[in-house]
Image 1 (cartoon, rainbow, N blue to C red):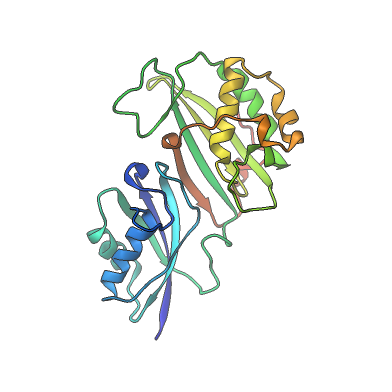
Image 2 (cartoon, rainbow, N blue to C red):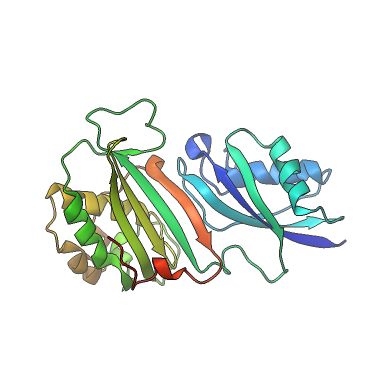
Length: 264
């Protein structure tokens, strides 16, 4: 049996999924795609690998997967059409290419970009509740922007990793952090580009920056927290629904997102 390895980029609304990774008796992104591929192959099991295992309620603009498709090679555009024709409405495939068998969607990645949106509205907006976090307290945008710069560079991010993660080496390089306000939507948008992310790392970083913006933490607290390597230093975690896997880099991180970029 011949196999063709496909690399595909997809977007999904994570609200009704119990995360990306397959789980028994749960609706997941991986499980949904594998079921669709099994239908296309008339009963053959096709294992799907994802670039990241997003949690329940987390969304993606640019999740990337790979799988080895058995039998006749299907042209990439036809593969997109075939899968989209049997996908539920909360998943859509956007790009597809045939890759070498040595490509691995996780191990070949050079970095990831996560975006987090948080609403500052006094009350939860029913039309935003599945796609933004909620923080109805005053925040100082400039303080958060200044504090975010302390995350740049190579650090041990143990203090920003939730328990339950299986990765022992918690050293990562943060290439880019940006904090901006969407005045029209009354939202704060956080962007992080890093060589890799630990379990719940983005949500913990967002919660920490919001505490700094609200005055619950001093402006220069992040270097101390990083040095402590202790999760007890940061107990809050932002809600899952405001988080989006925005992009996965397989080439070198573009210069405009490197440490010497002008971020603000």
